[in-house]
Length: 150
Image 1 (tube, rainbow, N blue to C red):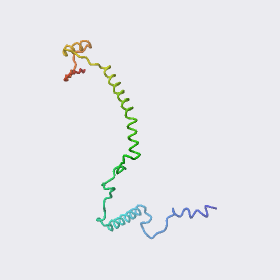
Image 2 (tube, one colour):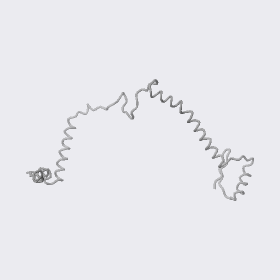
Image 3 (cartoon, helix red, strand yellow):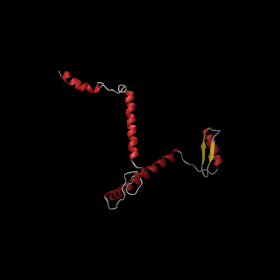
Image 4 (cartoon, rainbow, N blue to C red):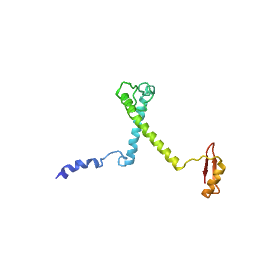
């Protein structure tokens, strides 16, 4: 019952209407004609707008706004007071923890590869090569430190 009553109304947008235009039933040509109308309308709109009226928009004297930043910060405001309190409270703790971490890293590195002072660097190098069983090593001679690489 409902199909007989509502069927033609529901299917009407999908049925081909009859037209006297010979290109109406070719969808590709319809699309080309529609795009041509859009292009023509765009040219008409562009021709009506004078170019001298176009100005760059600015905000508060700047040429552009790159980020949402305030123009002024009052030192008696909530933001400034909270930042000062946070620095006073957290900075000493951070300094202590970071100092401890740096000291631990330095101690581990010194224990892994300790430095030795030698009165005669050439004799110490030959002793090192004999102890390790090496014959050909590359030596980088610095101002006060020599580095050996294989």
